[in-house]
Image 1 (cartoon, rainbow, N blue to C red):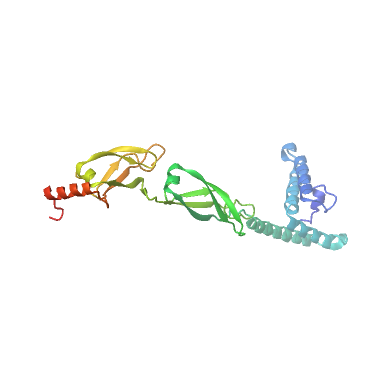
Image 2: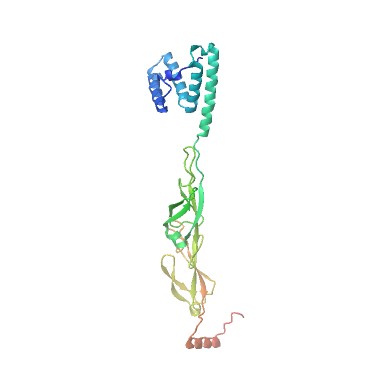
Length: 290
């Protein structure tokens, strides 16, 4: 094997050519000697091998520079640079071997690497989680700059769930995709409502006479009002479960609203109220401590 002039093989007059010019010359040469256009032509088969070989070396900037250095140092001084063809072949084989290794190394180095994901968390009210909303948050980037994101919080999201913003994480390497931004949602309980699974818990405040006599009353849910029946003799701490008035399981189905009874005694009584309570204490035989 002799040391080949790759520029001549690609019909290039000089080595001072750009990568685009090399690609264009390769496409023209490959089209000219393509096997489908030269059926049975053994010369064309050899030619296309040389063309592919030339493009493999010259299309990689580092291997092109190395090829140019060897060519100029060995053959730029005249035809007697090598007198032994076997020596030329040996050097050529070593050169190609080095190029193959270098190309493999560069491919490994240039493999696209996806950027790392970034995780953070935000808190939202139980109302915002129930209804859903677009929430703007401001976070610091790796460079220390503040960046504002619009986070679409879907209706009925669960506490602990994560929202993914694709491509908003760390920058990828070698052309790899950026990582993602993962935002963990923490739902904050309200003074009126607490979330447990898919059920909402609230307090149902009753007067002593409502608890003793029973009544019908209106209770506020998270998004409307509903009428409920209070049985007579209900005690503080008992719970009334109202179906399908809780948090979202899915788009149509909801958990329950659980109302915990708390009997509230008035702190300030009128004289008439005091009289009634005194009369009740005389006639009632009820003793919760008995």
